[in-house]
Image (cartoon, one colour):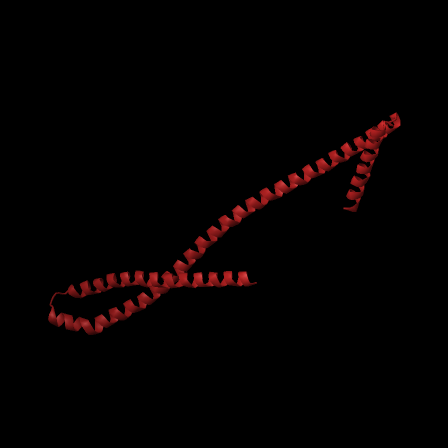
Length: 174
């Protein structure tokens, strides 16, 4: 920084000296040659500085383009990751709901087989009535499974939202 101030200081001084000579009408060919040489040197320096600046600007532009492309790629990957996480959460929740409902179904079918079948066969003499009850239980259990899956999914979403808020708060604090 000191060199650039010094350089400009010398050039400004040379310009003032030249203007002073013009005012006093004491300009000689030698003064014009010196001033011309100094001006050529300044133009050459300006060209060099401009070329360097242009190269640096091109590098900066290229870096900015790369950053934008990488940001877009990161955004796409984040969207893809969020979709994958949602699918994994849905699969885990679905598996949990299915396991619970399968256990309930087994218990209901065994209970129906041991306790209700004899009562039903004494009251109703239709042999397929027992199958109809089991089919009805299966349909009801399927609806209950969907409801249970929705419940677990909502609970999981609340956990994720709570965790994101906690992470945002920690980021804001830290």
